[in-house]
Image (cartoon, rainbow, N blue to C red):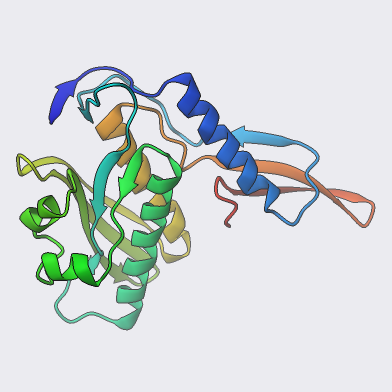
Length: 218
């Protein structure tokens, strides 16, 4: 059962697990790392109303479904369909990485339960999801417009809705921003998905500065 509260749910052990996972991501990079600095991008936390599942006996991941994002128009391009899939997948991977969510995998069984309708909240409830993120997308020139909604499927209440706009070349940044908002709205925690990793690599006797996403991409 979800209840409206003010506060935090992450404890030090969860934060430690997150840092360990980030360090594992860093080790996967092909560069020789000399130092690492986390640069937090424009993420200022302020106390707000949040929705949180209150587990009994300690921490437990929250059950969330991330529906396939769809193009806004009936007549859409293949580029819009592919971009919708890419953004949706990045959001899923972000939420999995956080250790705060159990993200339902989308397979043929889920698709059948939902009766081919990603917005079927009752269908998501039937497979065990407590919250569901839906979204649609439109490409306008070199920009993408994405609108998302987060629902509590038990009460059928909309938790939040928001629109995002960015360059098509920054679709991963947009996806990270969506995942940030989901974490902050549901838990009240300051998210990490828009975090950047800066590091120095020595090549050909010269040191160079590199910056990438928290997950090693870009």
